[in-house]
Length: 412
Image (cartoon, rainbow, N blue to C red; front, side, top):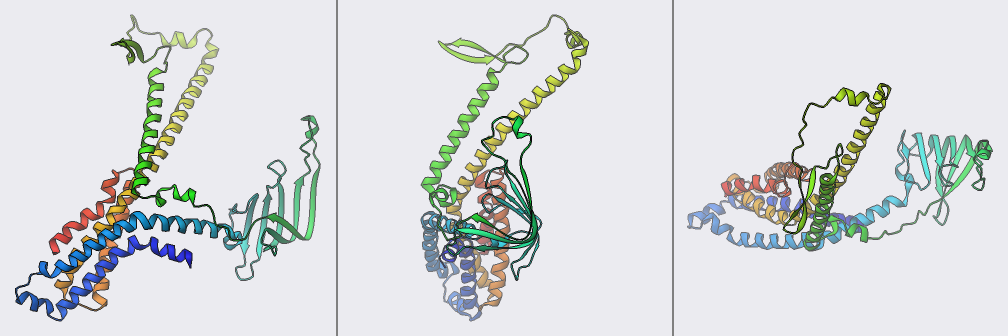
């Protein structure tokens, strides 16, 4: 119940704009269907005056939505995800995949060919027991088996039928490498066997501090501080990489020269190096021995590959930091988009309800769902473009607002 409560709070940013759109469509649709709008307009009351008190209500709802996004939602998402991770770690046998290795049980990799969801029996089992280290991995093959827990829920035991077990009897105290060439090995056949694994299956809440430090658990002030911190880190690392490139030597020459400028040593580009005559590449390549040519090529390729891998690693490291900064920026921009979405949907739904003049639940629901699907698709597309760095963050997050705002103005 607690998990569903926090999940419901986390779904407010998605459901509130749809609720505003549906409510405005139904209210003004009912007024139009019962000719109350016609009577008010005949009395000289304009649509803007009719919408004025509801506009004040919508401004209040938009302000409340902003404070909800900034103060309530981070807490709800932190508690929801911490509970979610605790539930996932509680019981590993809930969803053991078929024909792929399952590694969510500590110190154990499990492969299952097929399973019976009604009885819980697993068939065609392969188990790698890593509890004694990689060098002493124990391999178990079984025709079938079933998971169970001890009464105190602190140990997991696997009841298996008709199989074999293989294990090394390596002694870690064996010193010389020559003595390890021949190791005791054990192979066991069994018709029925139980293996115990330490596993706490009780429900244990995890620490919320790790999730609270992520973008989903931060308010605007914390997000700004995180963005500034990550940006400073990215700039510092970029400056270090740039300085290393400027100071690197190529063919015995540095691309920059240290020069005194106003008493300070600065690096300036090296003047162009010219040759008196063309360089004889073949003579350098074959000296001192033509047989060394293959060695030269191998060394040059290896050096080029090392440099390429190093710069690719640096690029990936910086791109991950930049992606993390964008995720924080996206979360900060979303604090404002919900409020604007509610106002825009009101100025779409109210005049549209007055135009169609259909109250009730049918027609307004269909129209609101269709409009919301358009909004949802545009919003997801902009979110993905911003997250992947294809567009600036503010352009991607505010794309849906920019598309729907002219529609609201036109209909009103």
